[in-house]
Amino acid sequence: MAWWRPRRDRRVAALGGLPVRTGRRAAEHEIVPFTPAPLDEAAARREIEHIVAGLAPHAVDEATGHILDGLIDRWADRWAGDVDLQFAAYQAGAAYRADGAAASLAQHHVLRGHDQRRLAQSEFVLAAALADATGRAPSTVGRRESA
Image (cartoon, rainbow, N blue to C red; front, top):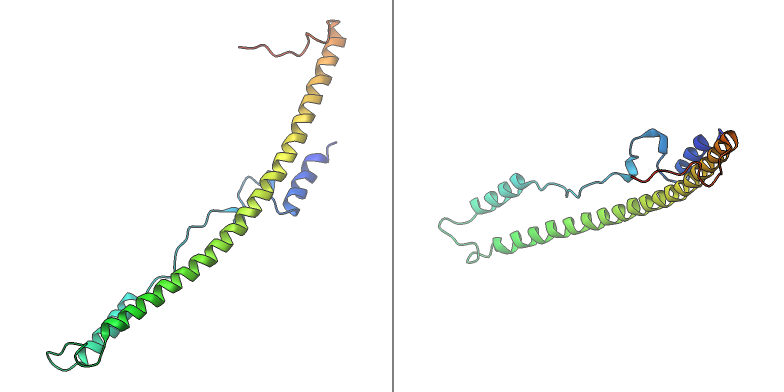
């Protein structure tokens, strides 16, 4: 069955697995680290400095009705919420990639079982042919020597 190996690779790839013969990892099975979107710290700092510059001289922001601490806290909460949303989307994508990799692995385990059976059959046929050619008993032909 010369068609077995090439078709097997295409079948695994068609079912979502990694093609065996390519030797490279598919993009959907690569490990992607979580990297949240970067904050524009300089813009936030400029905005705060602009608000502080608008305060009365020697004023404290809480005393003048400009509650700058509350504004900064709301910004921090919004940024933390954004990171939480980004992480939730990352987790969903990672779970999808993990499921695909698990399915590919299961397919490769099945194909490995086929290859092991074919190897065992080939070894048996070789041992039988060698026994027939040498006239020795088949039970002693083809046995591997233990080291």
